[in-house]
Structure formats: C-alpha cells, structure tokens
Amino acid sequence: MNSILRIILLCFCLIWIIVLFRLIRKNKLPVKYSIIWFIPLIIILLLVLFPSLITFMTKSLGMVSSANMIIGIILTLLMIITLCLTLIIANLKRRITILVQEVSMLKEKK
Amino acid sequence: MKKAKILLIIPAYNEEENILRTYGKIIDYNKKNKTNYDVIVINDGSTDNTKQLLENNNIPHISLIENLGIGGAVQTGYKYAKKYGYDIAVQFDGDGQHDINYVKSIIKPIVDNKANMVIGSRYIDKNTSEFKSTFSRRIGIKLISFFIKLFTGKKIYDTTSGFRACDNNLIDYYSNEYPLEYPEPITTTRVIKKGFKVSEVGVSMNERTAGKSSIGSWKNAYYMFNVILSIITTGGKNE
Image (tube, rainbow over all chains, first blue to last red; front, top):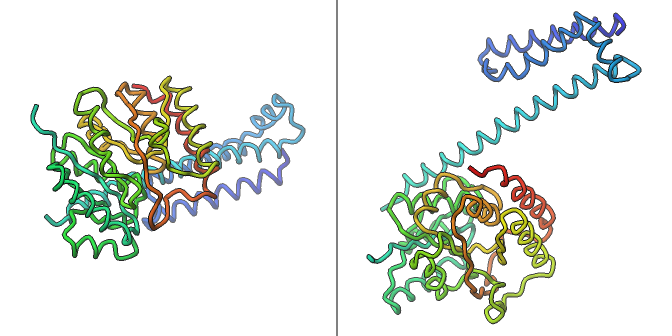
C-alpha cells in the first residue's frame, strides 16, 4: 500500500471520527448507533497503521493490488452497516405497528 | 358444550361502497338463523368515507390511526378477539367476496374440535369453485401450494384465501405474531409447522362487487417471490 493512499485513508478516518463525535455531542446520533460506525472505522484505521496486514491479506487472496483489497474490505463493512440499518428499521416498523394497533383500540368507542 | 363466542373480523380499506351491504347481510343472517356472530370492522386508515359510514351506522369498528396494511389490520382484530375472550375468530372480507352462509361450515371443524384453523377454499370442491380468477393467479396459488406441501408435508389448495377461521389458541398466537405482508400463506405455513391442525372447507366466493383487490396483477411476480421466500425461511422457525 503506497503512502499517499495511507495518508488519504488516515485523513478520511479522522474526519469521519470527528464528524461522529460532533453528532454525538449535539445529541443527533445516539451512542448506541454510533458503534455501527466506530467499529468499521477502527478496522480501517488499524489497516492503515499496520499496512503489513493489508499486504498479507492481498497476497493470500491472490489479488494484484492492495488498493483492491481495501475497496473490498470497505465494501464489506458498508454491507454490514446497511444490514444493521435494515434490522433497526424492521424493529421500528414492528413497534410502530403495535403502537398504532394499541392506540386505535384505546380510541375505540364502546 | 356452551355456545361458542364468534367474532367476524372485517378488515376494510376504502370500502365505502361495500361495507354497509356486507354488514347488512351479516345482520340479516343473524336474524334469520338465530346465530350470534359479532362483527368488528377494522378500518385500516381509509382515505374515503369508510370511517364516517361506520360511525353513522353504529357498526362496531376500530379505526386505525395509520394505514398498516392487511396484516396489521387483521392482527388488530385478533387482539380485539383476545381482549374480549372470543372462542372463534373468522376473517371476513369487507368487499362482498365472502359469503356469510359459509361461515357455519367454516367454523364447524373448530366447534367439533377437529381443527385449529379452517381455510375457506375455492378449489377443494369442484361444485363450489365457480370463482373465476385469472390464469396467472391460479398458477401462482398452485405454486405456493406446491411449496407449502414441500416444506410442511401438508397439501393446502387455496393458499391465498382470506376467508379463514381459527380457535382461541391461534387467536392468542396471532395477536402476538402476525406477518404484516402476505399474511395468509405465511401464517398457514407457520401454524402447520408449529403443529396446529389446519383443514380446508369448500366455499364459493363472489366476484368483487366494487373496489380493488389488495393484490394487483402487476405485483404478482413480486408477491410470489416474497411468499415463496417466506415459506422457505419458515422452516427454521420450528420451536
């Protein structure tokens, strides 16, 4: 992994982490949900700080460029994040359904 | 045996043209046959005058404050049935498709303790199946039927019929857990898997007199994909 890519990734991670911190402090992002973002960011950060990990993974998977490996890893992390979001939405939908049903039953005139 | 308390659950979404007639038929039937079917209409956040009609005519109803879709509406009915201790709940369409005269035959297996759930089937009895549905729809129902047989070992002919009755065990179960989308085939698969007894009784259904079915033809492929996927994944929910 060349140093320019490392620097870009490092900046990207740092900016992202700052944004997350600000959002948390403004009460816009609950800490509980920020974990979904912090874990992937920490993984990317580790890879940037220890590039030998990337080189090892790239070689053992038979890939030509370590940049491809990084894209692959980020893509996988994004898919995991999206799945988490889908689960959260499904849970919300279930709760809203229960709420609507119970409120409507309470409003029923006897 | 004491007389069973029976509730007809009628989900209604924009059914201002049908709901009064449907309700009237049930009341007439109750008078003629000295039966005592209670009715609860679940108004699923209709945007037309369904709500006013229900209120003005003193029809027992619950108006959902938001549209939940057929699954959420029917489940409200089951919650109501549980709350007021009904023994049998019958799902009955508000659009005039279902014939009140068949309710008796649908609940009979439950009254006789032979089944937990009974499906009013358009295809089980050649004489009653004058209901015309489109070719693609019949193929779809056959395909769902095949998958249910494959995964539960039980042949269900009319997998999408919304004319169904169930006993208090299933009222309990449904008020806790009922799928929001495509509820009929999914619940059928689930309850068979859970060991409940499901049977089918031949009924005839009328053409829709007015209003639109909840299943549009262009949605068929999407519907099939969802339903078959649910049937396949239900296999793992066997507790």
